[in-house]
Image (cartoon, rainbow, N blue to C red; front, side, top):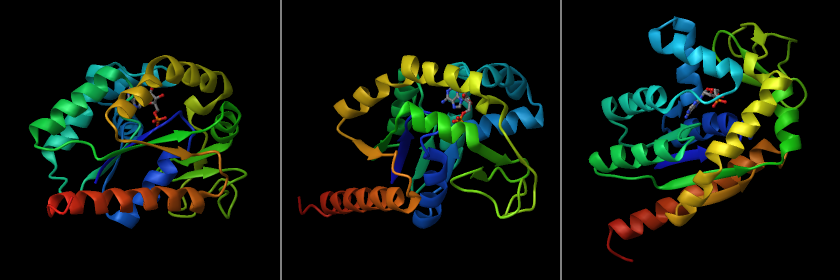
Length: 228
Ligand code: AMP
C-alpha cells in the first residue's frame, strides 16, 4: 500500500504513521524527520532548511522534493510506504504522482486527518520529542514515565523550536494557504479518506485507519485477480 498522511501539523499523523508502519510492516517516511536529520547533520540541505523550519515556513519545494524522490527511487518499496508530511503543496503532489508513475504505480490511499485548530494548538504546545531517537510524547496525553526522559532510549525530551506558540500559528496559516488545496486534489482523484483526528483515543484512530487499509487492500486484490 502506498499511503499519504495529510493534515495540519499536530493532527497526529506522525504518531499514527509510526504505529501503522509497524503493524503493516511498511516504511514510515516523514519529510519533517528527514529535514531535521539534515539540519542536525549540518549538511548543505540542512543549513538551507533550518531557516524555514524555525520560522514555521515551508522549505522550498525543490529541496524537499529532491530528498523524497531520492528516497522513493533508490529504495525498492515493494510493500509500499507511508508518506507523512509530504506532499504539502500542489506542485509536490504532482511531482510525487509523476515519480510513482515512472516506477509503474500510484498512490493507493490518502488519509486526511481532520482536526480543529484548538486541538492542534493543544497538541503541539504540549508535544515533546526525544533528542536521541525522535520519539514523540505529549505532556498530558502521552507522557513519558519519567519526566523529561524518553521511555524508549533514556534520551532527553525537548520541545521542538517550531512547536513554540508563535511558530504554531504561522505553521497553521501556512497549512491553510498552501496545503489545504491538496484535500480537493486527492478527493478528485478518488483516493481521499477522511479520518476524524480530534478523537482523543489513539487506538480508535488506528483502528479506523487499519479498517480502511484492509478494505482498500481487498479491493486491490479483487481487481488484481480479475473478479471485479
Ligand atoms: P513536520 O515535522 O512535518 O511538522 O515538519 C516540520 C517542518 O519541516 C515544517 O514546518 C516545514 O518547515 C518543513 N517541512 C516538512 N515537510 C515539508 C514539505 N513537504 N514541504 C515543505 N516543508 C516541509
